Length: 116
Length: 114
Picture 1 (cartoon, rainbow over the protein chains, first blue to last red):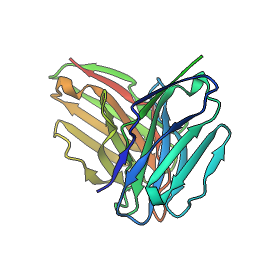
Picture 2: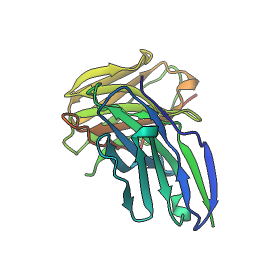
Picture 3: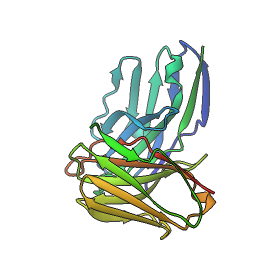
Picture 4: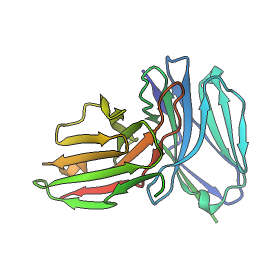
């Protein structure tokens, strides 16, 4: 079975604070893909990052960074110097190669509120 | 035309109505999906189509009927829905093969069943 857990339901920070969103996953596939999506109030899911299971290099993109650790089955997302525009629901998702359909298993989502 | 387009954006329907949701992708992808997002629930996969063929039905009630006439278009036909079916319905597409690409999502249809 595949499962994604985002234990943090809601996080509230003040602008310019750093914030880390946690994601833990379960899968029996040896090849799989992990994703983060952002859902602003408009509703559309915006793709942020895709990581395959063989690439454990951490990635930084501007104020965003991701820490992938296979040993703990975690794929955490950090926003540095948060801004009000970062307020949204963030989803972590998993796609295993065994299904061969590309379907995504989503976590419950973390609502991030950044206050001015 | 960009990405994945869904129409209508908002829909209010009675329990005896029949309506359809439309999704179109302009990305050349070979897979399309319907997801349901209810309040306080995670995104749930409903249907998967690969190369126009339905490859997954996630135990969805028969009052939801998908149709994929070609690899660029996906419909969700709705009939005799219940109030608990009110939700945001999201369509997505991706390229599936030796490596699965990220899925691109439409803006969703906010459905209210009265």
